[in-house]
Image (cartoon, rainbow, N blue to C red):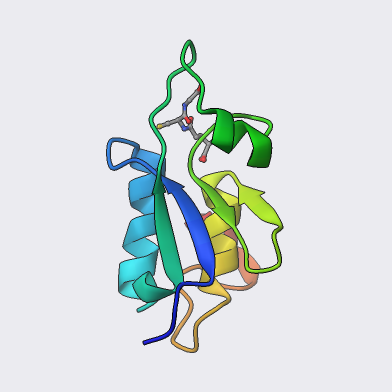
Length: 100
Ligand SMILES: N[C@@H](CCC(=O)N[C@@H](CS)C(=O)NCC(=O)O)C(=O)O
């Protein structure tokens, strides 16, 4: 097993984070992502997260090249294109829009 190449700002209480975790489980990519605990609320921001995501929201995913993706739908779409199995989010057509 190799070291994780990506970092997910994570808190298990977030339904948006849990959505990303489901995709990581289902596509066999859990070991590619390190989880960085993020404790935050609108009145108590996470300074480390804010440096990477100006919206100050989780989930945010730091890629191996240092770029950061945010919004769970963007992260899901990205991760779904990083594995060799059948995509969970269809790549095109009406099936894609229905799933999104
Ligand atoms: N549209 C965003 C929503 C993310 C979101 O609202 N996350 C909450 C946690 S469940 C958050 O970070 N809230 C902190 C804040 O609003 O300051 C997504 O799908 O990722």
